[in-house]
Amino acid sequence: MFRKEYLVALQTITFKEVKRFTRIWVQTLLPSIITTSLYFLIFGTLIGSRIGQMKGYDYMEFIVPGLILMAVISNAYSNVVSSFYGSKFQHNIEEMLVAPMPGWVILAGYISGGVMRGLIVGVLVTIVSLFFTDLRIAHPVMMVVVFLLTGVLFSCAGFINAVYAKSFDDISIVPTFVLTPLIYLGGVFYSIDMLPMFWQTVSLLNPVLYMIDVFRYSILGTSDIPLVYGFSVIALFITALLVISLRLLSKGIGIRD
Image 1 (cartoon, one colour):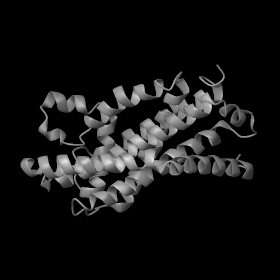
Image 2 (cartoon, helix red, strand yellow):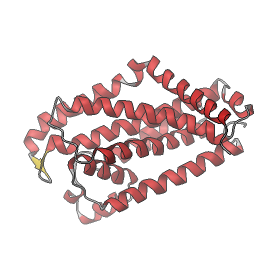
Image 3 (cartoon, rainbow, N blue to C red):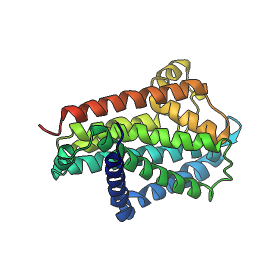
Image 4 (tube, rainbow, N blue to C red):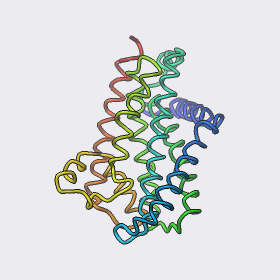
């Protein structure tokens, strides 16, 4: 049953998370804007002028959706993994666990913080993209929905990473060796139609591809994969990661050890 106390707890955790990353915005928000601007400048302006069009769009227009979502993914993930592991390291999480609130409230609070950071960075990167290309959003409602769903998914992934992490080095292993390759091979800089059939089939095993493709459709109105497949994959991974996260939290795995 949802009680008023749970709402207060959820608001408190969310406020703490938002205040944490906004207080150090030079470290949490600004780097993504600078990095993405460099991508726009190098890949969009310098290299894109040589590539020409892709799927009927200027190369700059084509890569903008992927670069925006890449910023959302990395920020939502890193916010939760660093914050929750920090709470474990400082033993603050024990205070939450003994408080009279269920695990899903704790999880929802951390996810809300990750989604907020991803959403803010996504909006800022979208604004920056307007300086490089004439961006027209085909389906704004769908764009916001994909923003939120992607933020939730990778916030959950960051939470799971933080639960199993034993040191600060552990929270950088997954982003470096798993997340980054999935993003770069997820169609940010190219259409999978350009790949040989074998590599197209391999690419379809990458869940990030579906998210970027759906997001590209929300902005440009074009996609490589049917939308129903894209949203189905997103929903499937969100459900699976939420279930895993709640189970880890309820069992105290990686927390009470």
